Image (cartoon, rainbow, N blue to C red; front, top):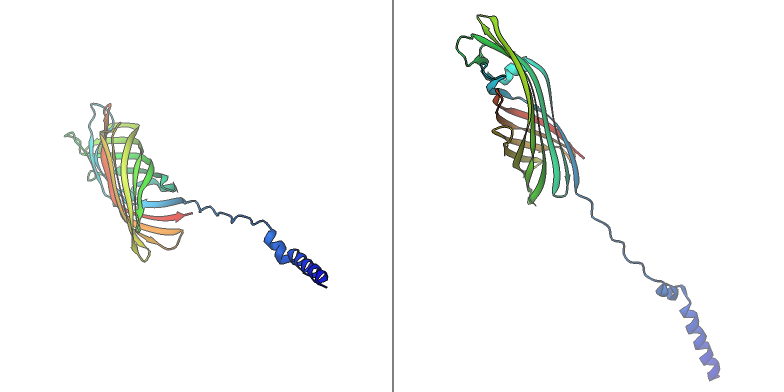
Length: 265
């Protein structure tokens, strides 16, 4: 009897060893998959409208008179031939690249806005096409608490063409025109601070020299974020350059309110 009972116990233990539960215990366990974090990549495009006036000194050739220019935005708008303004940005983590492009072509006729620095000329007209583009790489050296700050290194390209007519008593006395293209290295910083409820403030500044004696820029905006993709900006921008080479003079500043809409993807 005892041998038979022992045999039954052994058979029961063997059956338990091959039950699904036992088989599951013998199945090798696969490692838990590791999910890679999402890449912190951002693209942004911003069409903008810059209501800038122009003031400064402009000259086209050596030994020819220069003119003083003081043109308000309203006068530029009335005499505008063409304008295009666009900014874009790419960022991957803390590193990124930005570009800001502006082109304005304007024809200004009037003694109030354009005056010759040489006595005797009673009035002057100015036709000018101006393209400037700032391209810079940046590094985000601070990011926390709703505040970001970037250091920038890049260059600003200017391409300016100018035609000046000087008049005596309304009669054309001297007509001259010329153009230049030059590049200045620039360094700068920018920041953005969240204020809550979708609002924020942004600031940007850069300075450089090279082909010109100096060029610098300041910009500040109040921002509002509608959602994860769309935001709007309103503020003020000032951009100046002092270029004097080979008789060509473009010592001027553009400044005025700025409006823009950004799409982020």
